[in-house]
Image 1 (cartoon, rainbow over the protein chains, first blue to last red):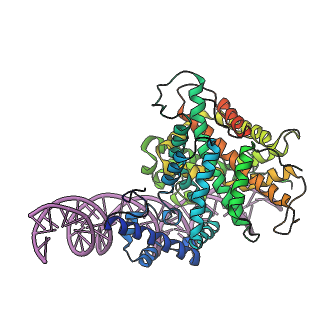
Image 2 (tube, protein in one colour; image 1 turned 180 degrees about the horizontal axis):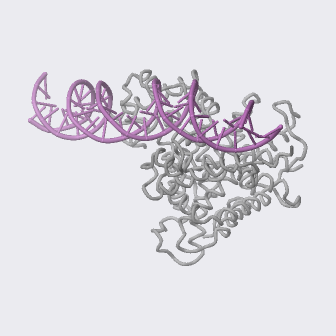
Image 3 (cartoon, each protein chain N blue to C red; image 1 turned 90 degrees about the vertical axis):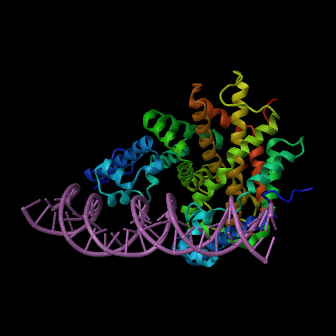
Length: 223
Length: 223
DNA sequence: GGTGATTTTGCAGAGCGTGCATTTTTGCAT
DNA sequence: ATGCAAAAATGCACGCTCTGCAAAATCACC
C-alpha cells in the first residue's frame, strides 16, 4: 500500500540511504558525546571524527553545530500531516490532531534510549532546549495549512484577495492557533513526563490529560 | 541605606542608569542596522561602533550576537507575574492571565516604531524568530510557579515529597500547561496580527479572540 | 582627593561557519 | 566491464563569534 520510493525510512537509491545513514550517524554521535562530556564541550571535529567523516562534511548536513543536537527526525512533520488528512471525518480537529500526534509519539517512544539521552542533553543545556522548541515550531505553518484544509476542504485561500466577511479571518486564525497549541501540548507533556520519571506514569496518560484540559477550555482545577 | 536601585525602570545610581543606557543603545543599534542591511550582514563590530563601545563590551551585555536582536525587555516577565498575583480573585486563571498579558502588550504597543522594526527584522530572518520565541518562553517556568501559587496559595510543593493523591499531579501539570499555552497565545496573536497589517484590526481584538477560542476548548469553527 | 569596587577595553586564542577547487563515489548507459 | 556525468566528500583559506585574562578607566563613598 505504501510507495517505497517516498522520503520514508525505506529510501530507494543507495545514495539516499547513505546520506540518511551519515546524517543519523552524525546526530547520534553528537547526542552521545554531549551526554558524556556536556553539550558545549563537544566540538564539531569530535562529532565528525566519531561519525567517520570530515569536518567540512558535517556542515554539508547541518547548518550549525547546535542543529546536530536538536534535529531528531526531519520528516516527522510529513507523517503527522498525512495522518491528519487520513483521520476519520467525524473527529473534531483537536481530536484528530491528538490521535495523529499520539501515534507519532508512540513510535518515537520505541527508540527510548536515544530519546532519553536527547532529553538529558537538552535539560543540561537550556540554550539548546530553546533551539529544539524552535525546530518543533518550524513545521507549525505547514500543520496549520493542513488543519485549514481539513476544516474547509478545497477552499484554499490565496493571498490577500478574500471574501470580506469576518468568517475568513476566523478560519485563518483558528488553524494557526490549533497547530501552535498542539506543539505546545506535546512539549509540556514531554517536560512533565520527564520530571516525573520516578513515578512511572505512562506517557500516553499525561498526553491525553493535557488534551482533555485543552478541550475543556483550561478550567480552573478543583480545589 | 535603602536600596532604591531595584530592577525597575527608574534606577538610582549613575552606574545602573549608564548600564541600562548602554544595553538599550546596543539593542537599538542592532535592530536598526539589521532593518537596513539584513540581520546576518551586521557584525558585532558594526553594532558596537554604532553604540560607541568596544566589541568586547558588547559581549559583556549579550551572550551572543543574536541576543541583541532578540531581547526586548528583560523584566517584562517580572511585571506579568506581579500583575497576575495582584489580579482580582474572582477571575479564572485563564482570565487573569489574559488581562495581565493584555496590559503588558498595550504597554509594548506604545513604542510602536522600534517594535515594528523588530518585527520586520524577525520576519526576514526565521533563524532569529526562533530564538525570539525561545526567549519569550524562558520565563515560562517562573510563570507556571506564580499560576500554581495563585491556584493554591501557600501550598508550595517541595520536590518529590508529596501527598500521594492524584491531586498533586493535576495541579502541577495544569500551571505548566497554562503558562505554556499563554505564551503560545501571545505568539500566535502577534503573528496573525502582523500578517494582516493591511486590514487594520486592533491587536487587542485578535488577542481576545485567541483567548476566547482557548476558553471554549478550541471547538471546530462553524462551517 | 583617596580608596575600593565596578566597568570598559585590548589582546590572544580556540572554535564556528562558508566559499571554492579538487578528489572520490554513485548511478546509468553503453 | 567500462566510461561518463551528477552528486557527495574533502582540504584549505578566510572572516566572524565568543571567552579568559590583565591593565586602564570610571564610579561611589568617605
